[in-house]
Amino acid sequence: MKTIGIDAIITIVVQLGFIWITFRCLQELHIERLFRQAPKTMPLLKVLLSIAIGYGCASFFMSFFGSLQNLGYLLK
Image 1 (spheres, rainbow, N blue to C red):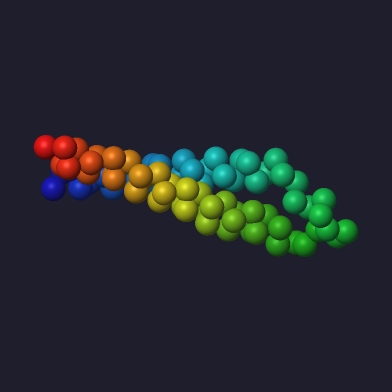
Image 2: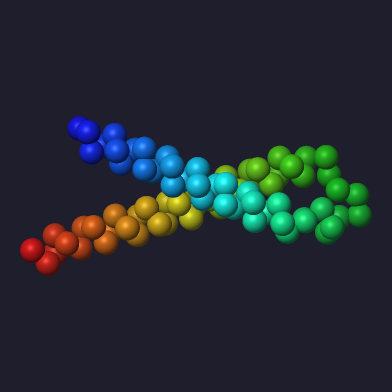
C-alpha cells in the first residue's frame, strides 16, 4: 500500500516537472511575434499547451521506465 503512495507522489512530481519545463520552453518561443496583434488569451494558450505537452512527455517517460522495470520479470 505504501508503494502505491510513493508511486503516486513520484508521478505527480514528474508531471509537474515536465509541465514546468515545457512552460519555460514555450515562454522562450515568443509565439506572439507570429500575430500582428497578439490575442489577449495568449498566456492561457501557453499554459494549456504546456500542460498538454508536459503531461504527454511525463506519461511517456513514466510508461517507458515502468516497462524497463517490468523487463526484469522477463529475465527471471
